[in-house]
Length: 48
Image (tube, rainbow, N blue to C red; front, side, top):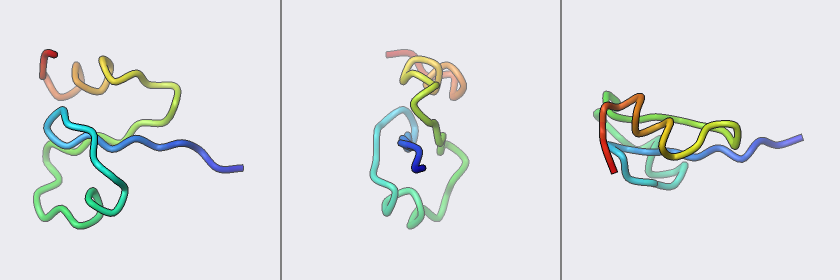
């Protein structure tokens, strides 16, 4: 069973490969399908 993971860097959706290549992961949020984009942005303190 695979989970659909979503990667957000500073509120912007990026690919898994981009996420793993990041040097600065301080603004990276990894979410599965149970988290919405809004929840990820809230965790970062970013508003849409």
